[in-house]
Length: 270
Image (cartoon, rainbow, N blue to C red; front, side, top):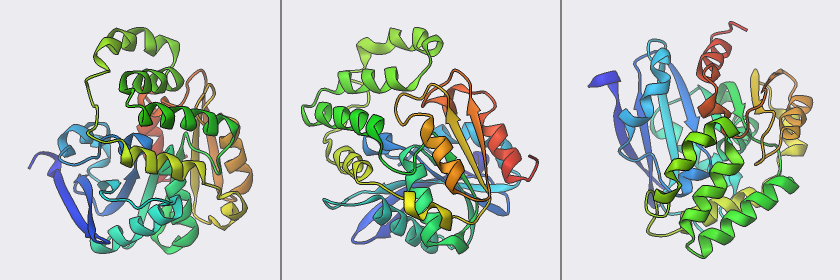
């Protein structure tokens, strides 16, 4: 199959967890997406999601996981990390490099804290070590829009808080379509994921992250704030920080060198 791409589902805790994988290298790279996973999972999207990682394929087998299908009320970020470790067990991924974006970075922090033997290297992108006033305001607003079924406003506000003005000049032309495209049948997953963020606080345990860690932040991040990246750098011993000037929460989509930078770090190239 092209790029050795695979769409899969794992039985997990009485429900299922969707994942995709691609590449054919001997090392494992685990990807954990952000809050958008609450609206649409990775199910069936292996070929669509693989393209940014083609340069990884020779050396890595890349796995991208969604949260499990049925999540109980009160499901926490730490619970998500625990389930992620079990999913890795089921796929016999004993040790991996881990890239977590936004909420995925929160899950990745607990994975590295609670299961240090599993995480070879860690990349934390546009994320935070705890909920802060900016995160609380953003996520609370998005949860309110989701609860009212106001999908267009939810997507527009997410975009406005994520991307640079230059990017938005092109993206805003699509706003009339946002009320229809990507609207889920239910916002329950999104709401449970959002509430988990509002209860997140790994600050006091960050010093337990022992693996080499790359922190990537956006200077103009209006979702988690750039201060969050500096806080993680302060508390994680073996860490380095790179800040994208002028970019925000969507730096991982906008910056052309984002994935090459991750690759160089994982390969020990600075």
